[in-house]
Image (cartoon, rainbow, N blue to C red; front, top):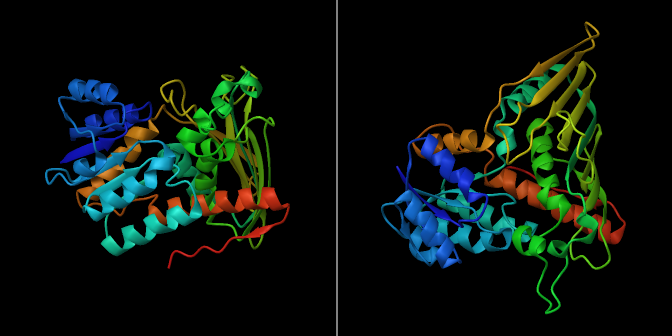
Length: 348
């Protein structure tokens, strides 16, 4: 199996390592920064291709990883799908619900394998959490937090638009602020645990001279319960389950028990294992599971490779990526209007 990588920035190294661990050849890479692209290509023994349109048309490639900034995803995804390539696309899948709908429609029409890189779903603790939530339901409440280290973020040029009117570095890379950068992973985890909501209320906050938010709060409405998510950047260096500043968790409360999942820092998975706490009403006992260190990127790439090779269907798939983008769009609309936004999602 031979693959290509579009975008050679920081996130690409995790895809590269994942393919290498899976024994897959990376035959071509593409990046708008020619020097960086050529350097990565040389290190891999791959070809540097300046234009992603040429890369996706290469007949020797079965699949591509799209690791470019979010605003570039739509065009690149559509080109890869049209060229018949299987796609592993970094999150968020696109920059809006309207763009995501185009990708979903194209992927379905082509029948291509399309996976979105919400790698936290693959953590063994997250897999076990889904089993426990199903066992200890029905759910009546969810609380979730994604607080990531960000001391000094309230005065950072990375979050300010340029004097020339260009967007901030964060907006140019991620397309949005904390809701997309932090919150999208948790929205996807909740979506994987209990399905999609039917409505959302939200508030977002940030300094007046920023073009994206640094704090976001969502109330996601389900038929029988509400999920509360807060996503932000904080100045605390010794908080979180491992006292390393990474404070990200989901608490699912069911009539049969409580499930609490504590994730680990996304770019340093070797530091610690995820933690799962399970409280059972039947015994009034809580069990704490500390999982072995696991690299979610390696696990997600292995799953994608298996799908391309004829294994199980890709997951999270294009619909899952679309669902997250729809929820994020609705949250921004709710924050702007001050009104609840209905969400209508169906896999059919």
